[in-house]
Image (cartoon, rainbow, N blue to C red):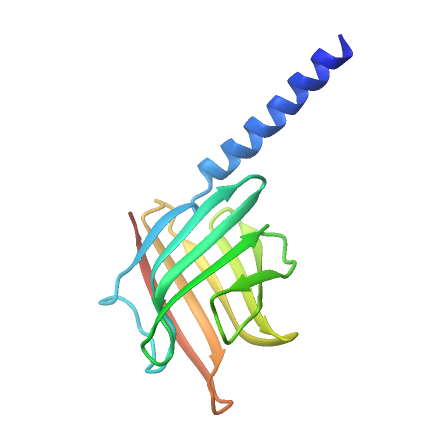
Length: 154
């Protein structure tokens, strides 16, 4: 009886986790809407961003161009808990953290060797169709630059 109850409890926990990811407005594939975006020159441009469940974590993959216009693919797997997790594919950063503010808002911070290189705020519209990223970064000359990237849900 105890084993059966334990298995049932575990199954409900897994189902609840999967359901919470499936219902999160952050999850899915997002395509950059360049016409609505305002990104400065030499700013990283992610043309596609994908949020997907990976067990009890979230996997975020981006495809786009780096500050020199060369193709760039990044991957990050972790939780939206504000803790740093490894980031691959971005030569300017080696960790990223996401912190959930509410169901529709996230804050993110990327670091290289423990030093912050960019930060931002992501907001998904109430209807779940658009995603806005307000990003601030330090360019190669040490100057702060900001941009707004608008994405459409696919």
